[in-house]
Length: 144
Image (tube, rainbow, N blue to C red; front, side, top):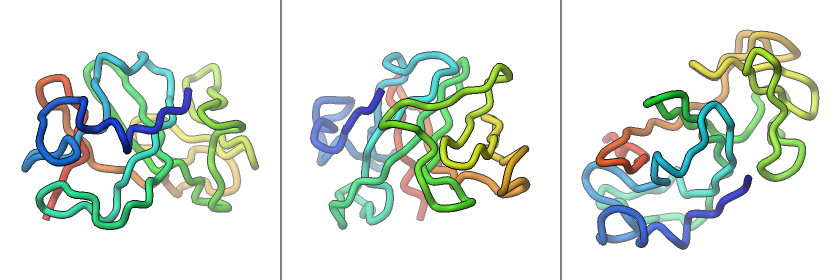
């Protein structure tokens, strides 16, 4: 499932600029995320100003993964070859053990830390995007 949230952030959470506040930019509602099923979202990660305003305008492809009350987000970029993990936008390969599998070269990533546990980039990790959940909103943290 591929979702572009860059234009709809005002409709989620606070009504401030682009759905952002001092607590971070709203990415998605936690109750909209399926359990243990990765989804693809596009949102600006780099170039977020202190007020949450987008300073670049270029959205990044993200993998969003919910496991119980925890939400983890990574850039949708395999550290092996710099390609997206999904075989089609929002269509991820998931092993029987729940690990994410890169469609390009079979690198296998566990879903706790995004670490590659098998394949050509074993020991490397997906780039984690720091998020927090506040009042049901998954927010990209705006750490200084």
